[in-house]
Length: 450
Image 1 (cartoon, rainbow, N blue to C red):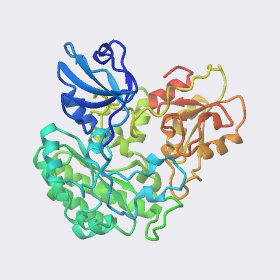
Image 2: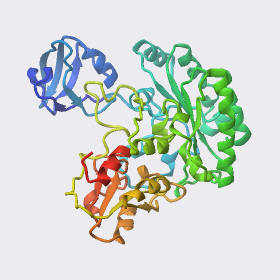
Image 3: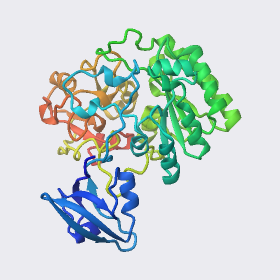
Image 4: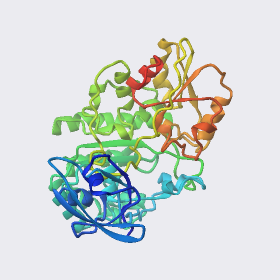
């Protein structure tokens, strides 16, 4: 078990007054060794906190005094201080198995940890969930959680996960719901595996066995050129249309039985089938927007100045004192790359091929154009902006003229780097990084700060 290391201390905070500094390692809090940032939060909630630090190889006792509602005022380097609970499934559709070699190590970590589900909205299959995990979730109120379903038929689910525990692990989903835990689910739909009649049976199983679930997203399989699984292939247009029809066909049944649609197709299905996106109201509370459900309609509404209320879909990681800025919902860049607005300079919006048809009708009335970037790095049907590699963006920009403003969504970056490790300095044209929401894009088109 590694010790949490302090990476930042807020000026004037209780931690700063007590003398904590970046580089300190937390050995104990109130006599206990925290195993993750969730337990850290509980331990830090004392008005007077005795801490044991390791500084320069020496053990240093520190007393921190909080006044009123003050937070401790530090940020640590990781969300989990003990070992990440890795996934012991071997799903043939797992995208981690489809990654090329040479990327940063964190991308190859295959977690199945309920704590990361709570903190960041990562999906867990529950195949490594235990009675003690359930007790902690219920006792500490770790809600919402995000669960991968894929199929409710035990044999099909076990086969898809390539794990015999997949046949029985949804009993934990039932237990979570019985204890009032909010749960969101997903079904990764693999053509010829769990679509068609299997998907129909799965949605019937969700309604019959897990009606308390908050939402279920059906997302199409992503296949990169690196997959070694012969059964894995992208949806065809007709398959996408049939899947969309099946999901939408179930929604009136869910609405009649539960008063809400519950199950939604991801936006990719509308793009693949060539259909129009539903209005924003169709998506109810937008609970699965981070999973690509309703993001196009929400983006358009935000672009046009309409208020889009989007709930925090992870746990409390952004508001917890000490939680690190990590995970896929972390800020993508270390601040916007600011260029001096050039009045009259033409604008090009750089994005993935899926987003291009969504953005074009929005930006063209403003005299801007969209540059869709083909994802040759991953290949296959990978087309979302968040998986663009620097080398593909660079190749697309190389043939573009100078003198334009190039806008790039922040979801392409993590810590200022692309997935392939390239940075903005490696691009042949200067770009401006824009938060990936409609209102920010509209302000950027006008040369206004986000």
